[in-house]
Image (cartoon, rainbow, N blue to C red):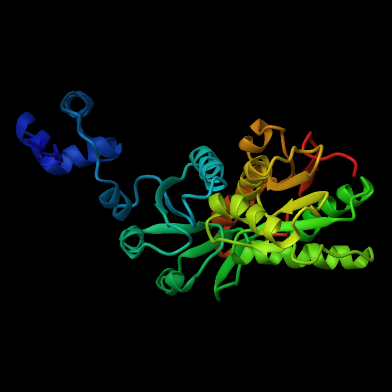
Length: 334
């Protein structure tokens, strides 16, 4: 049987005092009305003894409690979002914000989660990742600051913290071509940000007088955990024995699937094929072999978003954050 929640009225009844005195004692404002310090102390001790937990929504309405920030992760199945959510939680706690979290599957909004977020008096709404954004309309209309960390189609009234993806893919292309690779492929998921990274790779190669091998630009599946293995199978069907010497992957999650897919076809990395990722997850460093990957400055990006939350309407726009390339054992000379 579920235990009944202890209220301030219960404490007042037990101690024979008024509910308003209990409320002031627990909020720290009782001295302002000249309340007896001993009585205040008894109330606070009783609250601890019975396990009283204040109602967060009520405290917010009274102007007490931590400001609440809503956090939405666009795809809980994508390994990128675990570390990203953890970083937001870490920095939000340090900044004095409470968090309420909602997570979507494959970037499709969960309307029940959205409704729950709307019930909070949010200071801001942070969105991690891309995907459809029509669902943010009621937040914007209520004057809630909506800030996305990631890339996608913008929504009016929303701010963004982005990565300089062109520089990131430029680092990959330069690294591989400097190693002598000319037979290049791209494997990604059927997601807007992955399509954008493919378009960047094509542009960057064109500037060097190069292009991807015919049939080697593959966006195979909206699920990042499946796209890599499936992409390698499609690559094998398209090229037969004529494999590329390097595969550029749209994310680390895709690259991990590519490593497995290549092993399924009897190919070794990097002896037969070099592979690069994007995001530099901890999983990339633990892969066999460890992945060469574009590192997003995630801590800086989250810090930038929280700076905008604190500044409110006075916040200056974010400048795209510059990534770096972490070169590891998954790439070698052609």
